[in-house]
Length: 74
Image (tube, rainbow, N blue to C red; front, side):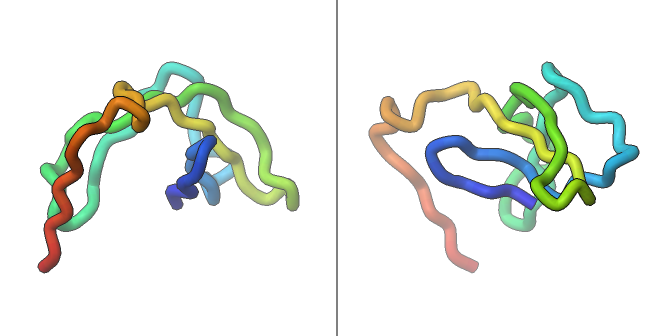
């Protein structure tokens, strides 16, 4: 599950899932091109409740440099 904000991360990753820094995160959402690389895993850790892994993300672009955003509603 993607958690946005100043420091985006993916939470609720199974503890045994093989996730490591440098792994690529791909899009798999309806309305987006399937398999589009969107970010890299920056670091991994354990959730506060110690039930899941979490992964902080590094995007290939700076949100501060974005000049236009396309929103598609279906």
